[in-house]
Length: 459
Image (cartoon, rainbow, N blue to C red; front, side):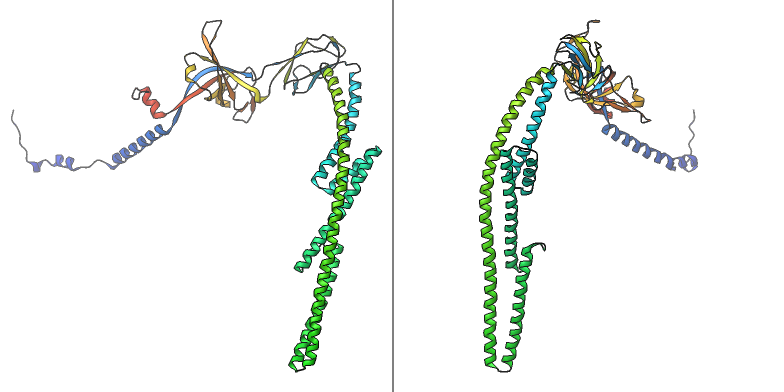
Protein backbone atom coordinates (compact mmCIF):
# COMPACT_ATOMS: atom_id res chain seq x y z
CA UNK A 1 0.00 0.00 0.00
CA UNK A 2 1.48 3.32 -1.05
CA UNK A 3 1.29 6.46 1.02
CA UNK A 4 0.35 9.73 -0.67
CA UNK A 5 1.98 12.83 0.67
CA UNK A 6 0.20 16.21 0.30
CA UNK A 7 1.62 19.64 0.90
CA UNK A 8 0.13 21.62 3.80
CA UNK A 9 -0.65 24.53 1.50
CA UNK A 10 -2.93 22.26 -0.53
CA UNK A 11 -5.06 21.30 2.54
CA UNK A 12 -7.53 24.24 2.15
CA UNK A 13 -10.74 22.67 3.61
CA UNK A 14 -8.99 21.18 6.64
CA UNK A 15 -7.37 24.49 7.52
CA UNK A 16 -10.69 26.31 7.36
CA UNK A 17 -12.25 23.71 9.60
CA UNK A 18 -9.52 24.15 12.22
CA UNK A 19 -9.75 27.94 12.09
CA UNK A 20 -13.55 28.06 12.26
CA UNK A 21 -15.42 28.90 15.61
CA UNK A 22 -18.61 27.43 17.12
CA UNK A 23 -21.87 29.39 16.45
CA UNK A 24 -22.96 32.00 19.08
CA UNK A 25 -26.34 30.29 19.50
CA UNK A 26 -24.64 27.25 20.97
CA UNK A 27 -22.63 29.40 23.41
CA UNK A 28 -25.71 31.29 24.61
CA UNK A 29 -27.62 28.05 24.94
CA UNK A 30 -24.90 26.58 27.16
CA UNK A 31 -24.87 29.74 29.34
CA UNK A 32 -28.68 29.67 29.67
CA UNK A 33 -28.58 25.98 30.49
CA UNK A 34 -26.00 26.64 33.22
CA UNK A 35 -28.11 29.47 34.71
CA UNK A 36 -31.24 27.30 34.72
CA UNK A 37 -29.30 24.51 36.37
CA UNK A 38 -27.99 26.86 39.10
CA UNK A 39 -31.47 28.29 39.74
CA UNK A 40 -32.91 24.80 39.96
CA UNK A 41 -30.12 23.80 42.34
CA UNK A 42 -30.70 26.82 44.60
CA UNK A 43 -34.48 26.33 44.56
CA UNK A 44 -34.16 22.64 45.38
CA UNK A 45 -31.95 23.52 48.35
CA UNK A 46 -34.21 26.29 49.67
CA UNK A 47 -37.61 24.69 48.95
CA UNK A 48 -38.93 22.70 51.90
CA UNK A 49 -40.90 19.47 51.66
CA UNK A 50 -43.08 18.31 54.55
CA UNK A 51 -42.34 14.79 55.69
CA UNK A 52 -45.66 13.45 56.95
CA UNK A 53 -47.19 10.39 58.52
CA UNK A 54 -50.65 9.60 57.22
CA UNK A 55 -53.40 8.18 59.37
CA UNK A 56 -57.17 8.27 59.73
CA UNK A 57 -59.14 10.20 62.31
CA UNK A 58 -62.60 11.29 63.41
CA UNK A 59 -64.00 14.54 64.87
CA UNK A 60 -65.25 14.24 68.45
CA UNK A 61 -66.64 16.68 71.00
CA UNK A 62 -63.94 17.75 73.40
CA UNK A 63 -66.39 17.32 76.26
CA UNK A 64 -68.44 14.30 77.20
CA UNK A 65 -72.11 14.20 76.24
CA UNK A 66 -74.12 15.48 79.19
CA UNK A 67 -76.90 13.25 80.52
CA UNK A 68 -79.99 15.04 81.87
CA UNK A 69 -81.58 13.03 84.68
CA UNK A 70 -84.74 14.03 86.57
CA UNK A 71 -83.99 14.74 90.25
CA UNK A 72 -87.49 14.92 91.75
CA UNK A 73 -90.67 12.90 91.36
CA UNK A 74 -93.64 14.98 90.24
CA UNK A 75 -95.80 16.24 87.39
CA UNK A 76 -94.15 18.09 84.53
CA UNK A 77 -94.93 21.80 84.76
CA UNK A 78 -93.36 22.96 81.50
CA UNK A 79 -91.01 21.68 78.80
CA UNK A 80 -88.62 24.30 77.40
CA UNK A 81 -86.50 22.17 75.05
CA UNK A 82 -87.28 19.85 72.17
CA UNK A 83 -85.47 17.34 69.97
CA UNK A 84 -82.64 18.92 67.96
CA UNK A 85 -82.90 22.30 69.67
CA UNK A 86 -79.66 24.14 70.40
CA UNK A 87 -79.35 25.28 74.01
CA UNK A 88 -76.81 27.30 75.96
CA UNK A 89 -75.33 26.41 79.32
CA UNK A 90 -77.76 27.62 82.00
CA UNK A 91 -80.90 27.32 79.85
CA UNK A 92 -83.95 25.65 81.41
CA UNK A 93 -84.89 22.31 79.88
CA UNK A 94 -88.01 21.29 81.81
CA UNK A 95 -89.57 21.90 85.23
CA UNK A 96 -91.61 19.96 87.78
CA UNK A 97 -94.54 21.43 89.75
CA UNK A 98 -93.25 22.85 93.05
CA UNK A 99 -96.35 23.55 95.15
CA UNK A 100 -95.95 26.64 97.41
CA UNK A 101 -92.17 26.85 97.13
CA UNK A 102 -92.26 29.39 94.31
CA UNK A 103 -94.71 31.66 96.16
CA UNK A 104 -92.54 31.55 99.26
CA UNK A 105 -89.50 32.34 97.16
CA UNK A 106 -91.28 35.25 95.45
CA UNK A 107 -92.24 36.76 98.80
CA UNK A 108 -88.69 36.46 100.11
CA UNK A 109 -87.31 37.85 96.87
CA UNK A 110 -89.50 40.94 97.09
CA UNK A 111 -88.35 41.61 100.63
CA UNK A 112 -84.76 40.88 99.71
CA UNK A 113 -84.90 43.25 96.73
CA UNK A 114 -86.53 45.97 98.82
CA UNK A 115 -83.80 45.82 101.44
CA UNK A 116 -81.13 45.39 98.79
CA UNK A 117 -82.29 48.46 96.90
CA UNK A 118 -82.21 50.66 99.98
CA UNK A 119 -78.93 49.13 101.13
CA UNK A 120 -77.40 49.76 97.73
CA UNK A 121 -78.31 53.45 97.97
CA UNK A 122 -76.87 53.76 101.47
CA UNK A 123 -73.70 51.93 100.49
CA UNK A 124 -73.32 54.20 97.49
CA UNK A 125 -73.79 57.19 99.76
CA UNK A 126 -71.23 55.69 102.16
CA UNK A 127 -68.65 55.20 99.41
CA UNK A 128 -69.21 58.64 97.90
CA UNK A 129 -68.70 60.25 101.32
CA UNK A 130 -65.32 58.53 101.42
CA UNK A 131 -64.49 59.71 97.91
CA UNK A 132 -65.34 63.31 98.80
CA UNK A 133 -67.60 63.87 95.77
CA UNK A 134 -70.01 66.29 97.42
CA UNK A 135 -72.41 66.60 94.48
CA UNK A 136 -72.91 62.84 94.21
CA UNK A 137 -73.22 62.51 98.00
CA UNK A 138 -76.00 65.07 98.13
CA UNK A 139 -77.82 63.50 95.17
CA UNK A 140 -77.85 60.05 96.76
CA UNK A 141 -78.81 61.38 100.18
CA UNK A 142 -81.82 63.17 98.72
CA UNK A 143 -82.76 60.19 96.56
CA UNK A 144 -82.71 57.63 99.40
CA UNK A 145 -84.62 60.06 101.60
CA UNK A 146 -87.51 60.01 99.14
CA UNK A 147 -87.45 56.23 98.82
CA UNK A 148 -87.82 55.42 102.54
CA UNK A 149 -90.24 56.37 105.34
CA UNK A 150 -88.15 55.28 108.34
CA UNK A 151 -87.91 58.41 110.58
CA UNK A 152 -84.62 57.38 112.21
CA UNK A 153 -82.90 56.70 108.92
CA UNK A 154 -84.44 59.77 107.34
CA UNK A 155 -82.98 61.95 110.10
CA UNK A 156 -79.52 60.57 109.33
CA UNK A 157 -79.95 61.36 105.67
CA UNK A 158 -81.36 64.82 106.39
CA UNK A 159 -78.33 65.59 108.55
CA UNK A 160 -76.01 64.29 105.86
CA UNK A 161 -77.79 66.25 103.15
CA UNK A 162 -77.66 69.51 105.15
CA UNK A 163 -74.01 68.97 106.07
CA UNK A 164 -73.17 68.28 102.45
CA UNK A 165 -74.91 71.41 101.24
CA UNK A 166 -73.05 73.47 103.83
CA UNK A 167 -69.80 71.78 102.84
CA UNK A 168 -70.38 72.53 99.19
CA UNK A 169 -70.92 76.20 100.00
CA UNK A 170 -67.93 76.44 102.32
CA UNK A 171 -65.69 74.61 99.84
CA UNK A 172 -66.77 77.00 97.12
CA UNK A 173 -66.10 79.93 99.44
CA UNK A 174 -62.64 78.59 100.33
CA UNK A 175 -61.81 78.13 96.66
CA UNK A 176 -62.98 81.65 95.83
CA UNK A 177 -60.97 83.16 98.69
CA UNK A 178 -57.82 81.36 97.57
CA UNK A 179 -58.28 82.50 93.99
CA UNK A 180 -58.87 86.03 95.26
CA UNK A 181 -55.56 85.95 97.15
CA UNK A 182 -53.83 84.54 94.07
CA UNK A 183 -55.32 87.31 91.94
CA UNK A 184 -54.13 89.89 94.48
CA UNK A 185 -50.60 88.44 94.47
CA UNK A 186 -50.25 88.36 90.68
CA UNK A 187 -52.38 91.37 89.80
CA UNK A 188 -54.55 89.25 87.48
CA UNK A 189 -58.16 88.18 88.01
CA UNK A 190 -58.28 84.33 88.10
CA UNK A 191 -61.91 84.23 89.25
CA UNK A 192 -64.93 83.37 87.14
CA UNK A 193 -66.87 86.42 86.03
CA UNK A 194 -70.09 85.05 87.53
CA UNK A 195 -68.66 85.02 91.08
CA UNK A 196 -69.13 87.79 93.62
CA UNK A 197 -65.42 87.69 94.45
CA UNK A 198 -64.69 88.55 90.81
CA UNK A 199 -66.54 91.87 91.18
CA UNK A 200 -64.89 92.43 94.55
CA UNK A 201 -61.42 92.09 93.06
CA UNK A 202 -62.33 94.26 90.07
CA UNK A 203 -63.54 97.05 92.39
CA UNK A 204 -60.31 96.86 94.38
CA UNK A 205 -58.22 96.98 91.22
CA UNK A 206 -60.29 99.91 89.91
CA UNK A 207 -59.59 101.91 93.08
CA UNK A 208 -55.96 100.91 92.87
CA UNK A 209 -55.83 102.00 89.21
CA UNK A 210 -57.37 105.37 90.16
CA UNK A 211 -54.74 105.79 92.86
CA UNK A 212 -51.99 104.94 90.37
CA UNK A 213 -53.43 107.49 87.95
CA UNK A 214 -53.42 110.13 90.68
CA UNK A 215 -49.84 109.21 91.52
CA UNK A 216 -48.87 109.54 87.86
CA UNK A 217 -50.42 112.99 87.69
CA UNK A 218 -48.62 114.01 90.89
CA UNK A 219 -45.36 112.77 89.41
CA UNK A 220 -45.93 115.02 86.40
CA UNK A 221 -46.73 117.98 88.68
CA UNK A 222 -43.60 117.25 90.69
CA UNK A 223 -41.44 117.25 87.56
CA UNK A 224 -42.93 120.57 86.44
CA UNK A 225 -42.31 122.10 89.89
CA UNK A 226 -38.69 120.94 89.83
CA UNK A 227 -38.27 122.28 86.30
CA UNK A 228 -39.62 125.68 87.38
CA UNK A 229 -37.48 125.67 90.56
CA UNK A 230 -40.61 125.77 92.72
CA UNK A 231 -39.06 123.84 95.60
CA UNK A 232 -41.88 124.50 98.07
CA UNK A 233 -44.54 123.19 95.69
CA UNK A 234 -42.30 120.26 94.72
CA UNK A 235 -41.86 119.28 98.37
CA UNK A 236 -45.62 119.50 98.94
CA UNK A 237 -46.32 117.30 95.93
CA UNK A 238 -43.70 114.75 97.03
CA UNK A 239 -45.37 114.52 100.43
CA UNK A 240 -48.69 113.85 98.71
CA UNK A 241 -47.07 111.15 96.56
CA UNK A 242 -45.61 109.45 99.63
CA UNK A 243 -48.94 109.71 101.43
CA UNK A 244 -50.75 108.20 98.43
CA UNK A 245 -48.29 105.31 98.22
CA UNK A 246 -48.73 104.61 101.93
CA UNK A 247 -52.49 104.77 101.48
CA UNK A 248 -52.31 102.33 98.49
CA UNK A 249 -50.09 99.90 100.38
CA UNK A 250 -52.33 100.15 103.46
CA UNK A 251 -55.40 99.50 101.33
CA UNK A 252 -53.75 96.46 99.72
CA UNK A 253 -52.64 95.10 103.11
CA UNK A 254 -56.08 95.63 104.63
CA UNK A 255 -57.74 93.95 101.67
CA UNK A 256 -55.31 91.01 101.89
CA UNK A 257 -55.81 90.73 105.66
CA UNK A 258 -59.59 90.78 105.28
CA UNK A 259 -59.55 88.02 102.65
CA UNK A 260 -57.05 85.95 104.67
CA UNK A 261 -59.24 86.26 107.78
CA UNK A 262 -62.31 85.19 105.81
CA UNK A 263 -60.36 82.20 104.46
CA UNK A 264 -59.29 81.11 107.96
CA UNK A 265 -62.88 81.40 109.21
CA UNK A 266 -64.10 79.31 106.28
CA UNK A 267 -61.46 76.67 106.98
CA UNK A 268 -62.57 76.52 110.61
CA UNK A 269 -66.18 76.08 109.51
CA UNK A 270 -65.05 73.28 107.23
CA UNK A 271 -63.44 71.47 110.19
CA UNK A 272 -66.71 71.68 112.13
CA UNK A 273 -68.66 70.40 109.15
CA UNK A 274 -66.20 67.53 108.73
CA UNK A 275 -66.82 66.58 112.35
CA UNK A 276 -70.59 66.65 111.81
CA UNK A 277 -70.20 64.56 108.69
CA UNK A 278 -68.12 61.99 110.59
CA UNK A 279 -70.86 61.65 113.21
CA UNK A 280 -73.50 61.17 110.52
CA UNK A 281 -71.13 58.76 108.82
CA UNK A 282 -70.99 56.58 111.94
CA UNK A 283 -74.78 56.56 112.15
CA UNK A 284 -74.99 55.68 108.47
CA UNK A 285 -72.59 52.78 108.96
CA UNK A 286 -74.74 51.44 111.79
CA UNK A 287 -77.82 51.58 109.56
CA UNK A 288 -75.94 49.74 106.79
CA UNK A 289 -74.83 47.03 109.22
CA UNK A 290 -78.43 46.45 110.35
CA UNK A 291 -79.63 46.15 106.77
CA UNK A 292 -76.80 43.78 105.90
CA UNK A 293 -77.81 41.56 108.80
CA UNK A 294 -81.43 41.49 107.62
CA UNK A 295 -80.41 40.74 104.06
CA UNK A 296 -78.08 37.96 105.19
CA UNK A 297 -80.93 36.27 107.03
CA UNK A 298 -83.18 36.55 103.98
CA UNK A 299 -80.41 35.22 101.78
CA UNK A 300 -80.04 32.11 103.95
CA UNK A 301 -83.76 31.44 103.58
CA UNK A 302 -83.58 31.94 99.82
CA UNK A 303 -80.63 29.56 99.52
CA UNK A 304 -82.60 26.88 101.33
CA UNK A 305 -85.59 27.35 99.00
CA UNK A 306 -83.40 27.49 95.89
CA UNK A 307 -81.69 24.26 96.89
CA UNK A 308 -85.09 22.60 96.95
CA UNK A 309 -86.22 24.26 93.72
CA UNK A 310 -83.05 23.19 91.89
CA UNK A 311 -84.34 19.65 91.98
CA UNK A 312 -87.56 20.73 90.26
CA UNK A 313 -85.93 22.50 87.31
CA UNK A 314 -83.52 20.84 84.87
CA UNK A 315 -80.77 23.22 83.72
CA UNK A 316 -78.42 22.67 80.78
CA UNK A 317 -74.90 22.20 82.24
CA UNK A 318 -73.24 22.77 78.85
CA UNK A 319 -74.08 24.26 75.47
CA UNK A 320 -75.14 21.84 72.76
CA UNK A 321 -77.97 20.13 70.89
CA UNK A 322 -80.83 18.25 72.58
CA UNK A 323 -81.17 14.52 71.97
CA UNK A 324 -84.47 13.34 73.51
CA UNK A 325 -84.38 9.86 75.06
CA UNK A 326 -87.80 9.93 76.76
CA UNK A 327 -90.48 12.26 75.44
CA UNK A 328 -92.24 14.19 78.23
CA UNK A 329 -95.23 16.54 78.23
CA UNK A 330 -96.94 18.96 80.58
CA UNK A 331 -98.84 17.21 83.37
CA UNK A 332 -96.99 13.93 82.85
CA UNK A 333 -95.80 12.24 86.05
CA UNK A 334 -92.13 11.30 85.90
CA UNK A 335 -90.00 9.52 88.46
CA UNK A 336 -86.76 10.62 90.06
CA UNK A 337 -83.73 9.14 88.29
CA UNK A 338 -85.30 9.02 84.80
CA UNK A 339 -82.83 10.02 82.06
CA UNK A 340 -84.88 12.39 79.93
CA UNK A 341 -82.36 13.61 77.35
CA UNK A 342 -78.72 14.10 76.35
CA UNK A 343 -76.92 17.30 75.34
CA UNK A 344 -74.34 16.86 72.60
CA UNK A 345 -71.79 19.72 72.63
CA UNK A 346 -71.37 21.63 69.35
CA UNK A 347 -69.33 24.66 70.34
CA UNK A 348 -66.45 25.09 67.92
CA UNK A 349 -64.07 25.66 70.80
CA UNK A 350 -64.61 22.15 72.15
CA UNK A 351 -63.96 19.99 69.07
CA UNK A 352 -61.05 17.58 69.06
CA UNK A 353 -59.80 15.00 66.57
CA UNK A 354 -59.05 11.41 67.53
CA UNK A 355 -56.34 9.97 65.29
CA UNK A 356 -55.62 6.25 65.13
CA UNK A 357 -51.86 5.61 64.92
CA UNK A 358 -50.20 2.23 64.40
CA UNK A 359 -47.31 1.25 66.63
CA UNK A 360 -44.73 1.62 63.83
CA UNK A 361 -45.34 5.40 63.57
CA UNK A 362 -46.14 6.34 67.18
CA UNK A 363 -42.47 6.92 68.03
CA UNK A 364 -42.03 9.50 65.27
CA UNK A 365 -44.65 11.97 66.46
CA UNK A 366 -44.59 14.38 69.39
CA UNK A 367 -46.97 16.71 71.18
CA UNK A 368 -47.02 20.05 69.39
CA UNK A 369 -46.45 18.57 65.91
CA UNK A 370 -48.49 20.28 63.19
CA UNK A 371 -51.24 18.29 61.47
CA UNK A 372 -53.01 18.87 58.16
CA UNK A 373 -56.53 17.38 57.96
CA UNK A 374 -58.31 16.38 54.73
CA UNK A 375 -62.01 15.64 55.24
CA UNK A 376 -63.77 12.95 53.26
CA UNK A 377 -66.98 15.02 53.19
CA UNK A 378 -65.18 18.06 51.75
CA UNK A 379 -62.87 17.22 48.82
CA UNK A 380 -59.40 18.65 49.19
CA UNK A 381 -59.44 20.02 45.64
CA UNK A 382 -62.46 22.20 46.49
CA UNK A 383 -62.13 23.02 50.18
CA UNK A 384 -58.44 22.58 50.91
CA UNK A 385 -57.30 21.40 54.32
CA UNK A 386 -57.49 22.43 57.98
CA UNK A 387 -54.46 22.81 60.20
CA UNK A 388 -54.23 21.47 63.72
CA UNK A 389 -51.78 20.45 66.41
CA UNK A 390 -51.05 17.27 68.37
CA UNK A 391 -52.30 17.81 71.93
CA UNK A 392 -51.83 14.40 73.54
CA UNK A 393 -50.52 10.94 72.69
CA UNK A 394 -51.98 7.80 74.22
CA UNK A 395 -49.69 6.22 76.82
CA UNK A 396 -50.83 2.65 76.12
CA UNK A 397 -51.79 0.73 73.00
CA UNK A 398 -55.30 -0.51 72.32
CA UNK A 399 -56.18 -3.77 70.56
CA UNK A 400 -58.55 -3.92 67.60
CA UNK A 401 -61.08 -6.62 68.49
CA UNK A 402 -61.74 -7.47 64.83
CA UNK A 403 -58.23 -8.05 63.49
CA UNK A 404 -56.08 -8.10 66.63
CA UNK A 405 -53.80 -5.22 65.57
CA UNK A 406 -52.58 -2.70 68.10
CA UNK A 407 -52.96 1.06 67.78
CA UNK A 408 -52.65 4.27 69.78
CA UNK A 409 -55.16 7.12 70.17
CA UNK A 410 -53.70 10.56 69.44
CA UNK A 411 -55.74 13.71 70.13
CA UNK A 412 -55.29 16.87 68.06
CA UNK A 413 -56.89 20.30 67.94
CA UNK A 414 -58.60 22.01 65.00
CA UNK A 415 -57.57 25.52 64.01
CA UNK A 416 -61.02 26.24 62.56
CA UNK A 417 -64.28 24.42 61.84
CA UNK A 418 -65.45 26.35 58.76
CA UNK A 419 -64.15 25.64 55.24
CA UNK A 420 -64.82 27.60 52.05
CA UNK A 421 -64.68 26.41 48.48
CA UNK A 422 -63.65 28.40 45.42
CA UNK A 423 -67.19 29.80 45.11
CA UNK A 424 -67.09 31.16 48.66
CA UNK A 425 -69.60 28.63 49.96
CA UNK A 426 -68.97 27.81 53.62
CA UNK A 427 -69.27 24.35 55.14
CA UNK A 428 -68.91 23.41 58.79
CA UNK A 429 -67.07 20.49 60.32
CA UNK A 430 -69.40 18.31 62.38
CA UNK A 431 -68.91 15.76 65.10
CA UNK A 432 -68.28 12.27 63.73
CA UNK A 433 -66.73 13.34 60.41
CA UNK A 434 -63.95 11.13 59.02
CA UNK A 435 -60.70 12.58 57.73
CA UNK A 436 -57.15 11.75 56.76
CA UNK A 437 -54.53 13.27 59.04
CA UNK A 438 -51.12 14.23 57.70
CA UNK A 439 -48.83 14.66 60.71
CA UNK A 440 -45.81 16.78 59.81
CA UNK A 441 -42.82 15.20 61.53
CA UNK A 442 -40.04 17.16 59.83
CA UNK A 443 -39.14 19.33 56.85
CA UNK A 444 -36.41 18.67 54.27
CA UNK A 445 -35.12 20.55 51.29
CA UNK A 446 -36.21 19.23 47.89
CA UNK A 447 -32.56 18.55 47.00
CA UNK A 448 -31.99 16.51 50.15
CA UNK A 449 -35.17 14.55 49.56
CA UNK A 450 -34.16 13.71 45.95
CA UNK A 451 -30.63 12.72 47.00
CA UNK A 452 -32.00 10.48 49.76
CA UNK A 453 -34.34 8.79 47.32
CA UNK A 454 -31.42 8.13 44.92
CA UNK A 455 -29.16 6.93 47.79
CA UNK A 456 -26.73 9.83 47.31
CA UNK A 457 -27.52 11.17 50.81
CA UNK A 458 -27.59 9.11 53.94
CA UNK A 459 -29.91 10.09 56.82
